[in-house]
Image (tube, rainbow, N blue to C red; front, side, top):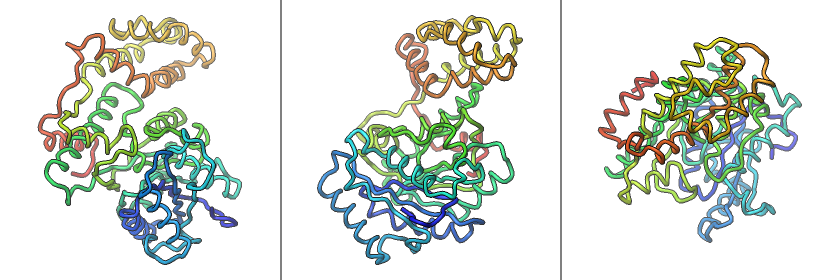
Length: 391
């Protein structure tokens, strides 16, 4: 850890068996720091899951030895002790269930805040989340500072993203493209439904304020999906906007490190499993419900608003004991229309919506079955245009 160095802004990068990628990632960060209006520390969190093999463990130890020698092999030109720091979790007594990428991110972010100048909840302090196989553009840091300077409302932001595919074969490139369609398509359907969670959740492509980080309870410790759970919690504390004028570039590669995400999604496609999109009809039902609630007056909102939902959603809400829960929410929420509408959005969070989609797939498969990704290149252009992202 930084020791006596006071760190204001920081980028946290979990690292496990990334010796083939980390130097390139840090080189791109070094270039981006040259255009950053404020200093940003880079913290590597070297971690190992309980099931790590001998080769991967040896790679971690080679990286750690190199960083301790300060031999320049992996640091990308960053200055150890000034720009670049690391935490070694490989020899720590950490329970197997917490030897996860989520906990590595958490330890990194929490460590940065504990080494702060005491202003832990300062909303002007930025915390960047990256991965060791991800390169960034030269304006990566500058774009974030500009975003939060121009708009004081966000608790966080997600970056535009494009996986690196130039050196991939056609099958792998197609699989990566379809996965990008899946991510953007899901975010677009959420946004069209009127949900406040209409953004993608990628661990290597977000930034948040220190204030937002603390308010939402910090990073989750999950082995996968830590980005999803963290960002939906962050959205409940404030806006999550999209940084469109800079882009992160994760590696498009096979990986078995996590149970779901980029690597597994690509692997399943290469094994012959088709990547399917959530059915748009699920989100149309949500939109109908949100619209009816938006048109309701305060008295109606404070009553049993489940009755405003379409029949298919009413069944799901009953399964979730929504009526009873909503009355508790109403009791503990100021009797202001906007506050109740936000309370509804907080209840109908990303996890709720995923469960609703799965409920419809299971109970009405003929109506709400997932759909294949047809014409992925054309679909990707369409989705990027919808989010006003550079083509």
